[in-house]
Length: 98
Image 1: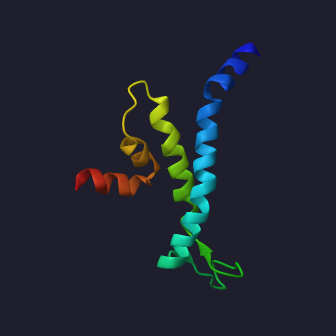
Image 2: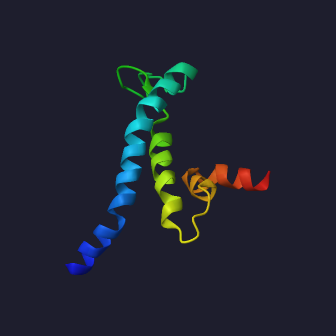
Image 3: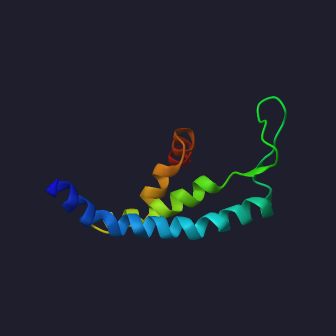
């Protein structure tokens, strides 16, 4: 139990940083999704929701995770490698190839 407390104490600041960035980035992501039309529009076959839903919520979560990630690395590298991990596998291979 003591080891768990030590881990929690060590990393709680990173979790808090990721949470705060995500909380503030989510409304921005919703605004940008609505502004640029990045919406999941309902149809009656596959998407039975009542109204369009913004797609960029995952980007806000990725941004929060990426904000805390460089602080976890021993060298303090830039967030670019951590952002790369947030991309789906097919986009990662396309970005690395081209």
